[in-house]
Image (tube, rainbow, N blue to C red; front, side, top):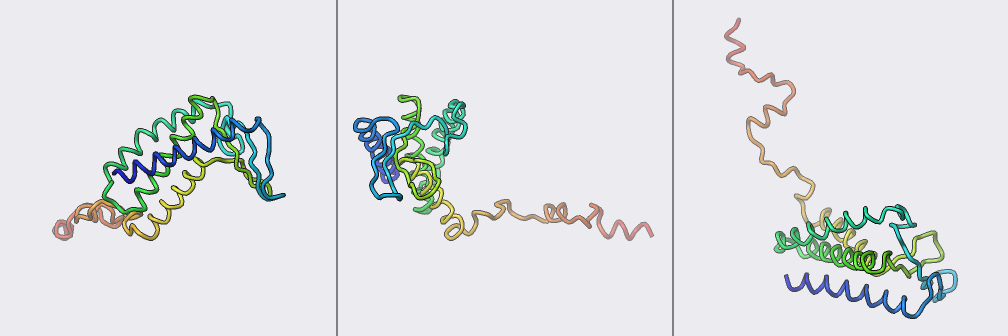
Amino acid sequence: MILWISIIAATVILDQLTKWIVVSSMELFESIVLIEKVFSFTYVANYGAAWGMFSNHRWIFMVVTSAALIIMPIILYRYRKVHFLFNLSLSLFIGGAIGNMIDRIFVGYVVDFLEFTFIDFPVFNVADICVVCGAAIMIVYALFFDKTFFVDKKPATASANAEEDPSHDGTDQKNADDGN
């Protein structure tokens, strides 16, 4: 469990440190080109999600993130002995969610600053990277490591099989034969 807490803490610290550097050294909407027509540091205030979606609905992000920050640590603790990738994924999710939640609470918006200028892609931050990497790792885990992830977990029983058979009318064959 210490490993997962360390990953969460490192994620939050790296996210907040990079945001602090940007806020303290750049003006809002200032852009520093690192690779011409490819990549820039561009300080923007994101009041919503990607591309500013739902920017007038900050409460949605606060509620959803709060719920996730209650549920995901419980899942992480409960399933701490599951595969490494499962726990790494949850740890990155949690760290990213905390990083952006800190911004929403204390700044009123999320500080974004990483911009790929060669495509129409939203400006993002370290917390966003962690959330996306966590999602990608969870997909890899579900597809390649947990063969039961997409399988119905209920054990099959004779009565359950009879109920699922649309040709079965609930009567025994013996009782149906007695009526003739």
